[in-house]
Image (cartoon, rainbow over all chains, first blue to last red; front, side):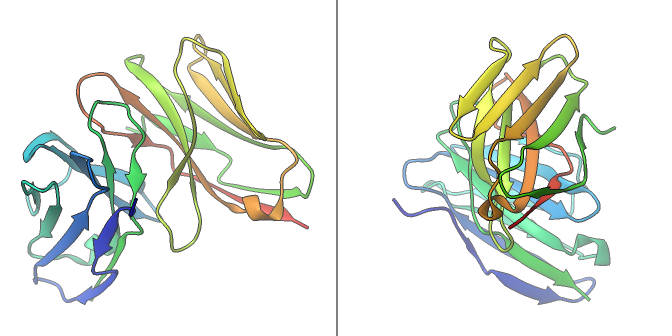
Length: 113
Length: 113
């Protein structure tokens, strides 16, 4: 089975721009979660989608949004980028039955200049 | 509020030694405690997980010890190998239909040959 894939792998943007990141989960997985990883804050939960519905949301501003498509692929969008948004954005997929093993992708490294 | 506290931040052990990483949690609603291993340039990968109904779980050289009354759990890596050099994250989640994981801030383990 192919693993979780994320595109693009690297991205450079400037302040004020917006960005869209994509995540393709493992085939058959219906849950996709997004995390932000930074050296200072570690891994922080952004949101989770299950069957196209947002099931949970972390403590991030409304500039961070996401969606999930009928094929379980997910996108996250960050609008009006700030320098502090520079991070590794990870998505994880699972069957979605709660507390199942989550499989992480390699992440998208976002640098905001 | 940091819900899962992890220590130490970094750890250096000699090949063949025992690596011990500790975590403490605050929320008694947590009932699933996984450990993830992350190599540079990769996403985290599940190593081993435990639920509060057992006090210890062993998989190969990796053991989780769990102390429910103290709200603490730890990862022990026996016979540590240079290939174990990575960053380790403890995490916790609670029942409720969401896959949200709350992570500790990570421990960078270096195993010297």
